[in-house]
View 1: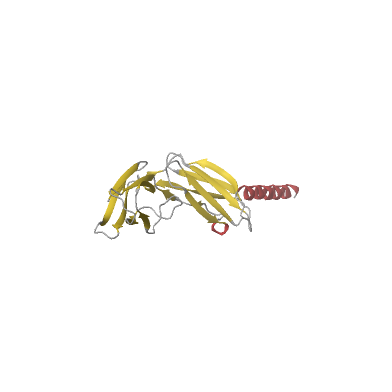
View 2: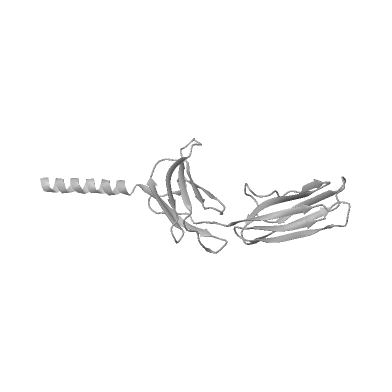
Length: 208
């Protein structure tokens, strides 16, 4: 009888031990380079937890994507409001994802695949050849990257009088950047387009 009790007790301890080991969340995924249609290797992946009712972000893990663009994190199950996943690499746009506690499960891994694009820059050069105080140039972005902190505005831009300047606008690599323009009070209007090569700056010039 003692042997049976000992066996049951050992089995119970083993069960608790296994259960304890499995009480971890696992998040993993693939990070892709959408510009070149390939995995994004050697990107920095940081994982933060945010407690319930708090704005404090606590870094709980950091790693690099492997040669195939994969990353994996395993972390203890603790009651949190949400988690933040930040993926960065030089000359690529930042990936910033929020994962809520309710989305995670101990029974299965949480898969979070992400993609980003290479950066490029459009150099918009404007040169008023015969400036007058009443000259009025107006332009608006027609195509190009929107919604990022570094992005140029999508609203109408106005310049008056003498103008000889360049404006740098960030863009997705290997895509077009274009704008429509008007020299008000004249028949001079149209569009300008430039193909922005990844990791490089491409200039488009408007002389008016």
